[in-house]
Image (tube, rainbow, N blue to C red; front, side, top):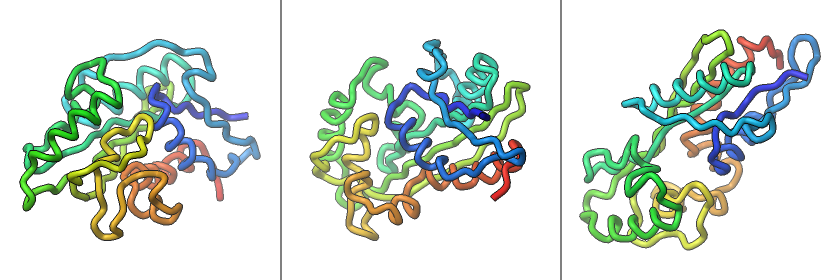
Length: 212
């Protein structure tokens, strides 16, 4: 069985990326592809995100875990960019109010931010860069983004690992950017990470010699 590592400690990201990859077929030799997590293979090491861009952090993490595990590794980095705040929180999205902030801490902070934003300038973007790195150090990166607005009031059901999504609203379909709000078709159309993973799957098929 061939394995590919989803190199993240964020359970929300792990579930989402795994779901987006699960339709990958078996390889040329007929060997099934198993998607594994850091927990599955007993890796508890963490790495500091010192990059200055999403791409740098994405590649940094994937490279570290690919070499550590000896497996092809996928990692992503991204964030919420609020136009009225000059793109903040951006690369600091998870650490915007402190390195140890919880989902609830971020929700509470965003309540204040959402109320303070001007009514005519609430545009925001979710952006991500997803990287695939082989144990030999070869790297591929792809990106994805989605545009929406910051709602004045949050969607009350918290999506674990994704506190900002409770405030991100998609005017075109009049729904929050939230797993429980969107249909499967809408997730594939609007999810910024899915847009990146869709590109990455073409690379994975080629690199790991997977045929449809």
